[in-house]
Amino acid sequence: MSTKNPRVRGAGCRALACGAIAAGVLAIAGCGGGDEPSTKTGGESGLTLAAADKATGTVTFCGPKDISRINASGVERFNKAFAAQGLKAQLVEFPEGDQQRSQFIQRQQAKSPECDIFDASDEWIAEFVSQGWLEDLTAYVDSRKDAFLPTTLKAANYEGRQWGVPFAVDSGLIYYRTDQVESSPKSWQALYAQAAETDGIAYQGAPYEGLTVNFLEVALSAGGQVLSPDGKTSAINSPQNLAALTLMVDGVQNGAAINGVTTYQEEEARRVFENGKATFQRNWPYAYALGQKAPKIKGKFDVAPLPPFEDGGKAVGILGIDSYVISKYSKNKAGALKLIDFLTTPETFRISATEHSRTPPLRALFDDPSVRKATPFADDLRTAIENGAVRPRTPVYPIVSQAIYKNITAALSGKVSPEDALKKADDEINKALRTF
Image (spheres, rainbow, N blue to C red):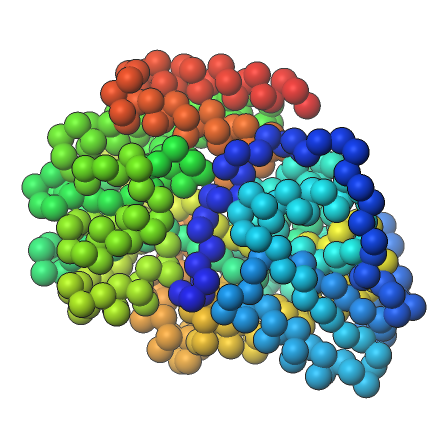
């Protein structure tokens, strides 16, 4: 994840309900296939690299605002490599978060061929697939799956098919002050107990997607779930989830959690930790490099994977994964796959890791000397990713997440009991699931 342009995980579905874009979206003029594009595909199982080998024309890559020029750099190198073949790429920048998602939805509802490739966050995949907006990439991904850390492929997997190729992966980490504690606590309960005795823990406790993620990391480690195995009913109101929420609520009440934590997103938690006002912090990897530049904590902190829950629990981090997806309405799907293949090579990932602090999804790169030098906590990060989980796979995930963070907020603020919060979330999630 780039330290210059951190993707704030959870911004993607903060306020939008599934497909909640008004009807009557104007058709958008296409620019993705203006140069007589190749349209070869790989048959029923999806696109294949062999079918895309001789692709020509223009490929339009639509992604978030490219402040650190990660995407622009990749497009420039692609154009140099394939100019003689008559294949080139161009970059269109969208705003971050909700606006990026809405831009994608507007184009897909209009069946626009403007964008061949999109940068899609993992929580959007099920919704987009259910709408028929994505090209099946199963055949291509299967040809490379052994190179990827298995958990990273789950992000764009839905109903047994692969709809995207991961390129950026994040997992939550525990940051701790080495001048205040000897090591990171070995369980969530121990962490909260130690936080209550020191300067506390800062995490993403504001009512948004980030709180859903933070709650799920504790709840899943306690053995909880959000949905039934078939995804048709809620499983949020369980003893395991209650134990997790009770721990978090008690932490707010007894001072283990930093005062004001229920207003914090990623950056607020980071700044509190960097200002020396917290002993622990839950945040994404991007905060590491920034912390090393903060005078009050430089050289005084370390990171560790998220801990397990006591009583037989296991460590579980919610992964934040971006994947390249191809629009069903692209007129240059072969060229699009060629670009994705180029942007996900070991060399491209090596550049992203060493120059932009972006975590690679490929197994081998965690042992690469240049990557390990750029990411001193590579082993902890790999462990966190290997133990990671993706958010629930459902087309109504934005509504499910809202039901979680809204009711968790009510419990953390003391407005309702943990029991009542989970009962209300359970009812709201079941209502959402009955809509599809």
